[in-house]
Amino acid sequence: MTPEDLIELEAIKRVKYAYARCLDLKLWDEIATLFTEDADQLGRLGVELAALPIEQRRAVLLATLAGRTAGEIAVIDGIPLGTAKTRMAGRE
Image 1: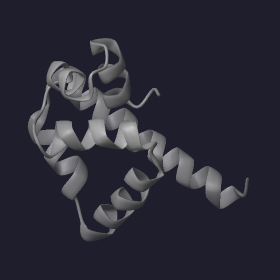
Image 2: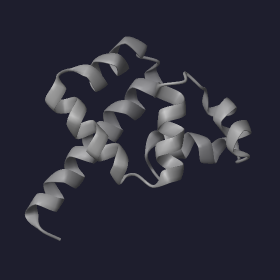
Image 3: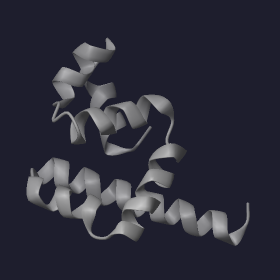
């Protein structure tokens, strides 16, 4: 793994942590700023989302773009609630 890869992984971890924090504390307005701060960040977000496993990416997108809760995601994907929460928090 190159130093650039490590930097990218850290960036992904920071976004995932910030997102999970916003979900846990129900900071809905902060989620919006997290993903739309500037065009450069938005481009990086796309790269970071693409790096996530498909199941996790689906949960994150269902929550952020479709406004689905962990319970709704669990039903939609046919998975336990804890698994949906884990996918949304980025610990998968």
